[in-house]
Image 1 (cartoon, rainbow, N blue to C red):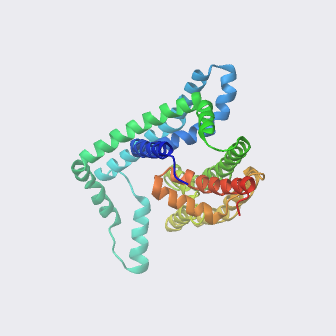
Image 2 (cartoon, rainbow, N blue to C red; image 1 turned 45 degrees about the vertical axis):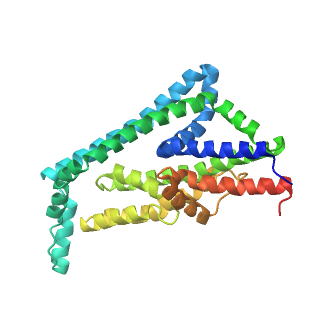
Image 3 (cartoon, rainbow, N blue to C red; image 1 turned 90 degrees about the vertical axis):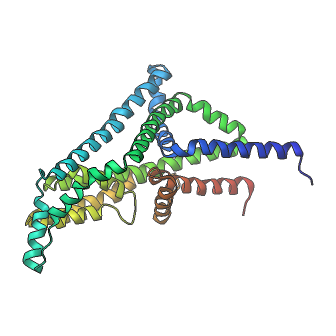
Length: 334
């Protein structure tokens, strides 16, 4: 059976244009994936809000909320980190934790290590490094600025016209309507299951662990809370490295009571949060993912897609499994 030349040409033409389109969006892929994720999460809110307001106004309000809730805190955090580095380079910032570490190493092991001077030396060399890397930093800054603007615009139009886009995609996909409907519904359930049972649980667990560090007075507790929110996305790692570092810091500081509190708090409140919150939030009707699949999705997608892979990796693998199940049921595969 020979292939129709028109069909072959059409297929090749679409493939070539698809490759060209991907090469266009690839430099900003992480920002576009972030826009898709935000639009997916906010779309139910947009649908309810647009009943009271017009669709463009509702989308504009939600994008403005994204700026206030995400972009502004990230910019403020970057400014604080830059200020701390500058103060460290000038020698104006006290480092009591390092002083205690130096004292323990000297008294217990007889090792003389000038951690403070070395750290300040590294920080002092940063201006020269930044000057030599200025062109690359400028390009990176321009790329990040354009990426954020693109993220906000794409988020706006996905909220405003997302329903029409989904309808168009379903109209061009060569699948029977029942199959397309079930696949779309299963994909939606899987995505929400991953977001609620993986991403949201990680954020809450990181926040709860951060509260414990804040209570006992660990420095930069807000920073370490953000770190734990990301580490909690990785099943094997979790919040343990940061909590362990906090315990070590408290022991070095001579705060045995605080260290014991963090140990007990981590083994009870933080651990229970993961188990019970995950069981409460995950939709039992949606397909669940094995922790090994989540681990592979997080690490593999982070390498392939950058930071947004932490969120999209498990979703992609979950949707793949769901699509196999749907096709098997409808087309008697296997």
